[in-house]
Length: 162
Image 1 (cartoon, helix red, strand yellow):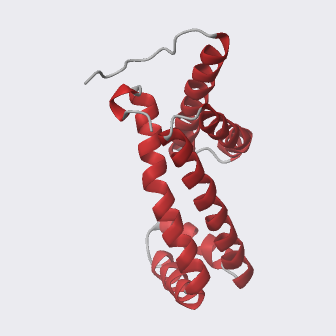
Image 2 (image 1 turned 90 degrees about the vertical axis):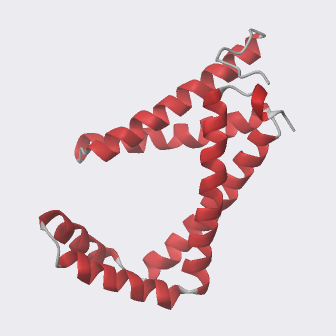
């Protein structure tokens, strides 16, 4: 395993995010799989509470109410399991210092960027803009690292020495 103090700050942030996200997604996957009735009940209650809120919360509640089905919960469980597996794999490979772990993150984020751009242009919100900016930054940062490494150039970025 690579010494964490020798990793650039950007890479350490990405690894930290992956290490937090994997167990959260695992918990969500378990909940949607093993506690589907409880999840459905919770989401129905949430929909009712949101509908009683202000204008924005009412719209969220209405949207959730229209899209909350058994099929949606099953699909959500499948997506949560897939996201858990890929996030855990990415975190493990990045922790081990495997360059193809960075390529895996680049590919995963790169596939989603066009979708994020589409939604930002058709339904712009500051949250979508922030998510797009962060993901584009991660994509560019890791892609640049991989290209520099492929060319045999030193990997740029501040390195914290012990």
